[in-house]
Length: 186
Image 1 (spheres, rainbow, N blue to C red):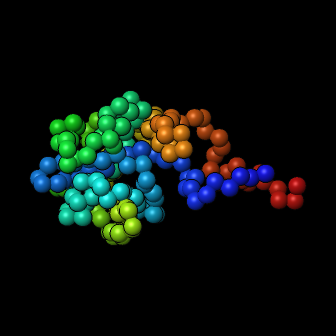
Image 2 (cartoon, one colour):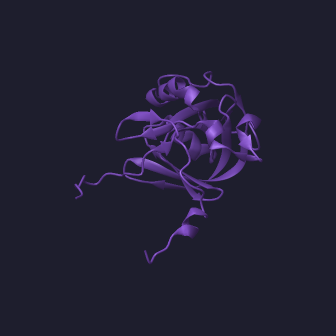
Image 3 (cartoon, rainbow, N blue to C red):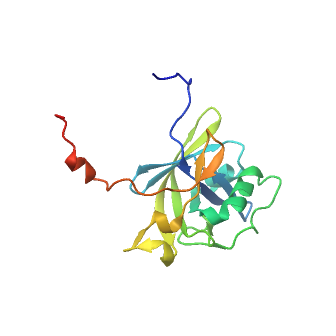
């Protein structure tokens, strides 16, 4: 038996990210978990309009998305609780830049991406940003065969229902493989 929960999004947990851009000549950051994959190089951000970071994304048409690991939980949560309008977050991280001058990336995050804004959609309470990943940077210790290994990265996961950060568990099965054993006739 199922219980109707109302109009609730049940797609949690989501990877927690720190989105960066430049506002008034300085790096600014916001903790965002409402991120998505539009296609292999496409990324979406659902950001409440209250974020100062939104203004920088719209003005510069660039942003970064950094993936904090579990060991960065306190700082990541702090970034999400404090507005850039009230606290200058530019000095909280060592930043670096790739191709895009207004997409500050966080050196302390083991994986970070610089993105170019493709489209901006104004929703009733949020901005939806659709971007293209221009470059991805990863510390070698989180790579396996040249790809990001999420077991090594230990990304921070966000769950709205429990209002907690979570960690990954063990793998369940191999994609595009385990389904070969499925027999629809059983």
